[in-house]
Length: 148
Image (tube, rainbow, N blue to C red; front, side, top):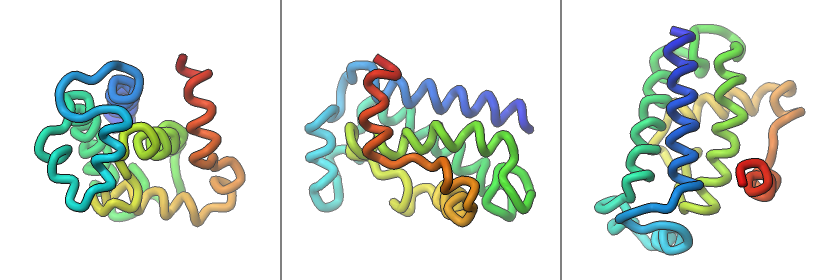
């Protein structure tokens, strides 16, 4: 299962890079998508997501399914996060910020990904995580120099 999850993390990272760093074709993109997401119901984007948004959401759905596979919040049945949780968390932290900022997609707290919500809620209860947890502003400002 660890190898499957490690491949899923790479798949998620690739889909996120495609969404954030590659020009989109079809659907709404960039600032227009962010403005569209402010409208009630967001019917246009939901009805016609860009191919990169659709691909990202499909992989995010897989991650959420894997997190809901166990009775607790972690990828494995454990009372604490394991290495695979730590591998995912720093990237998904960046995804929370960048998807909200550049694409108008709220991941955490949207109600769409309950496993991811519970996972972050569990991380937020751990002082060890809070000591290195980043914030949206830092993630948004660091991404352009890190990824070009």
